[in-house]
Length: 613
Image 1 (spheres, rainbow, N blue to C red):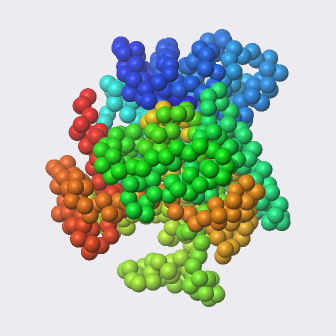
Image 2: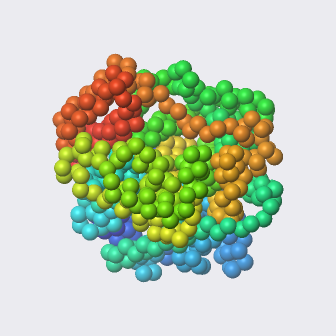
Image 3: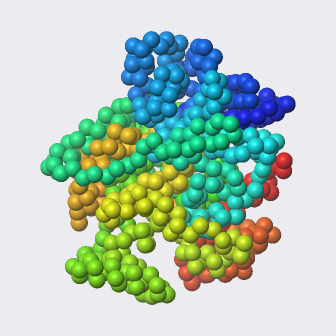
């Protein structure tokens, strides 16, 4: 697990620039640094040693004949199988690390190497033979990859956007079209980031950069295709698949532990892994501490549980640092406890397993289910309900509007994923005019929904979340908050083999009136006590609602809302009205307040506090 930077072109002081960029992301790899420079290319690397702790695994890694050089962030869990295959084809290896397997795999298979990889990855290979760059990002977007064009036309790329700040030709500007969609989604939802001209390579995509042109293509996609077989057979197979994935994710030359909350996902991973230690955090606030559940399960399993209670002061003090590590504003409140959880774990271990991805794969969110009243409504013929939904779309909002839309079984008309903070009409009430012109939420989602236009309602919702919410929110914070503390976080549910098995599970096995992700819960009973298998999903509750009603924290946010830089983007009177309404308990506006506050903290950190180029 590491981080890399790189750029094309012929800077006179490129070694100095490269080292500054590498230093900017030293938290991703404090154990070792490396660089590679050739005609028109500079690659830099920071290493967090996990596999083959010797110098043999250092990067950038150069091919024996000098034709190619690799920088790679991630872990390949089947690298030993690929290595054996390559040895049979005549390749010789000098290390026992996965990075060397990717390099030799590229030399043998070219771009098709990505089809053989099982794991989390972002990598770039410089191919001297045709002066090209080849790179790819993993199937789900577990590992980040960013790129931009500098003012002289060079390609600048890396694991974190902040490293670009140290390149003299990087143009730092706010992307004015990112803010409005963010207010709805709570995260950056487009390929172009909050930094204008900086793009994310989408998950499951590869690229070839040659002669100044970037050619990007998708190499894999999720394909839900129901395969009917007995429910009990699926529960047995899931338990086998999950436990096999956990075994694969254990591969390491350092100690592996796990994060543990009170929910089924992390509990299932922990019980399958059986580490020596688990780590949990809660809040020093009434009803916001669930670490007792984690301690109880750890005791049952005979595992040591280490936990911490976080205070509001700690959260507000760390928040600018949290947003700095995020690279882009991301207002999911659970990012805050995750930052402290990673900090706690790093005191003892370098690798942890976590339960991200189970809700998206096995349909665990409440929004995937339908209420009893909706079930009654759906006895009306679908053609009538769809006509009602299309009519409601053309009308102003009224009581029952959302109910009618959901009843039409057309999620592309109303479902934008697990986060929906501001409606677009609400965003227009607080934004300055120049920031209202942006892709609509519906346009952003439509680009994803088109790939499943003939699928059923649940498939569409899962697919949207797997393509948008999961990489944009869940996995972004998992990577950035763990790497902020030089901790490698692995996610066994987000494994290609797990996904390919789950694609066939019938909907009624996932959601059936008894619970969400029902088949996973039943599978977990082979490993977990019933109480944990049945536990209702709670997420990672954060007491923001109550903090914002205390004078101390109200005043912290107030200072941001009334700042000169807030007035660049927002009607500050509207912001203050919202903040005061919440404090006075007129309305509960905590998510809206936190989303705006997050953006302003991010902006101040990168555009005011950061030394100008």
